[in-house]
Image (tube, rainbow, N blue to C red; front, side):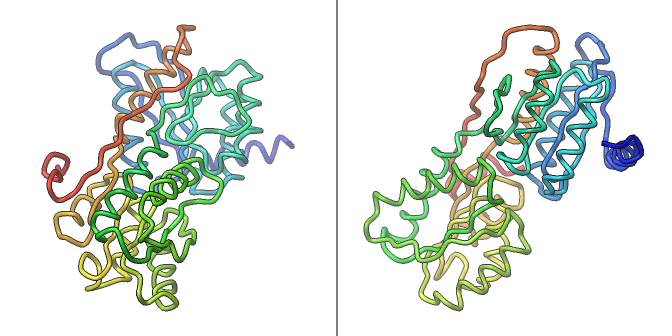
Length: 308
């Protein structure tokens, strides 16, 4: 890569970077950790970032956060910049689990520990992965949706960003769970890229071609909320909707009765654990290869335990 291009890329990345310096408890080493997030245009990843920043403050490390805005080429440039700087560890939430492999392997070859968070990187031997059990969560979503539908009817499935392990695993778990309910048929599957506006459009189109649908599973709350908007008065009455993430907006929709359930992750905890693992890796301490974080089915009966 030419020096001018590299400098321009670095400038763009720095413009979108937030940093968390020393402070709080713990030893203030000032080691630099780069956290590469797929997008901050999503409440889930904002909470993940906040948890990471709090943990960095407690540990006394410098956390530089870069936002790829769901563009894998942008993320590749950000990871290349991290490799060329004074970075001691990298936390990556890949835009695309396959596309990130080359950049992550370059970091690992350079001796920089890499921690995956929420999504894995296919074809790379990460030092550790902090993630929810998305397959189990998908199965839980199937159970909640089937229960709400009386174990019969037809379903639309809104898929996340193609190539992400989160979408793949949630979808696989949901499909596996649905096998227990022969009275339910999944009549349509389409990606809405984990995005609320995209889900509004996709659901509107799918409902026109499948007007008798009585259930909808969205692989995150943002898509579920977009679907609810498209469904209008049908949401929670004629059509049962289940989401995934447990965001504040998702919990509010459960209270309102438009969302049947969400599979709640703990994004702040994911961010916190990722930073703690990165700090241990910098110190040369042994860390677990896989650190699972529990997911919980949230419905109207227990939403009060989760809503802030």
